[in-house]
Length: 157
Image 1: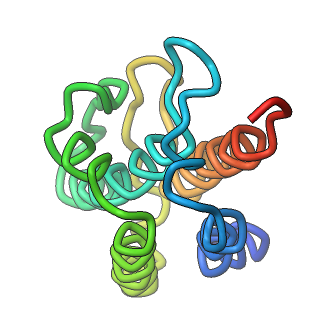
Image 2 (image 1 turned 180 degrees about the vertical axis):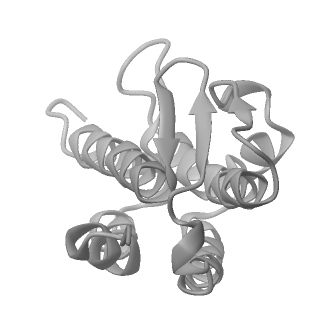
Image 3 (image 1 turned 180 degrees about the horizontal axis):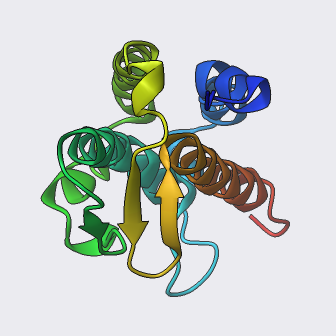
């Protein structure tokens, strides 16, 4: 029977904690500094992570309730939740992120093991079962965590 790999499960439970480790002591103005013209700030990258978590949970729910649903790429720049999160202080954003992750973990923990093979199709990346969706979610999150780390440590600030 299909299972969620230990590495995936462990990162689901812990990877989000890195956001606070990376940004918790950083001044708000540094997080809001647009280091790369035309690219998101560190805070906007964090807001994206927070806004995408409920979108991802909704995708999992749809996979559990429909046969091979199709999902377009997420467009944060047009998501009202993302835009509202961009205006929050980092401490508030971190609190929302932690609460959402606990909710996501609880949701994943309650997926029937027999349903882990259910699939959904990402319009750009293809067909994935639930453990593969979790892996893609975590790799996407890690990419943004690394970007945030780079942005707050860019020389010349």
